[in-house]
Image 1 (cartoon, rainbow, N blue to C red):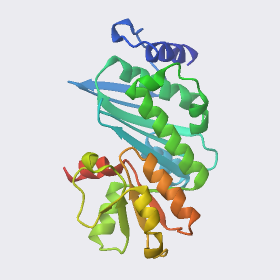
Image 2 (image 1 turned 30 degrees about the vertical axis):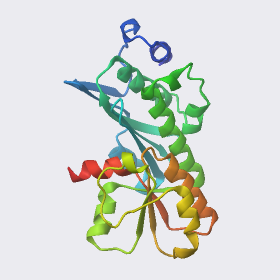
Image 3 (image 1 turned 135 degrees about the horizontal axis):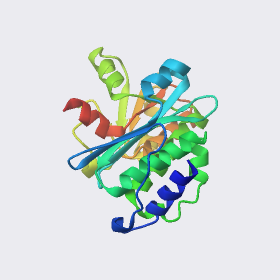
Image 4 (image 1 turned 90 degrees about the vertical axis):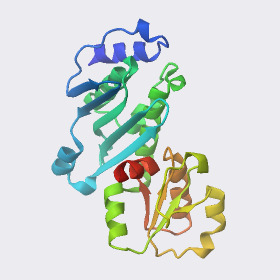
Length: 245
């Protein structure tokens, strides 16, 4: 595990992929490349985690990046905050295997999302592959500490099919927004702040944004103003768009 962490850190700090050191096998991990796409997982599967710990005791977060195309889902146990597993897909490049290796290392060492955030990434932030990992840890840590509730695209689709009464507010910049249902209200956080008095606090609210960070800020603002039935869309608008394809 220590060797995997060393190689992952070295590769992540190396901007030229030709200089990447070959990664050996990482425990509990699988990596598959098909054409230009790579798929990887490490730790427990989400289904196994929910079965072992209970569905309500597993908190997950998904973050998508458009360029390079990479998506990471990580999940942790609600009470201990320990990372249980993660899976990802994205552009097939040498840094993707290092991303899976580093995720595997954090899971194997019993780390929490907060521990991930405390690590000095030695310039990882300059790489979007590492940026998405940091973003996932940030949102997962907030969900664990602030009690944020996530809703999957599947469950949201069921709500819509059942014609439930709820508000869906998307906070993504207009140019980055995929096609969403007509009922979705698009606005900025500031516009949402100005409309708080017009929203019934008893109505369930689903928030979404491109990376999830803006939705997290809006969720915090709503909770501070007395709204309790608030959810964020796991994976944001891109996860909804993927479901509709």
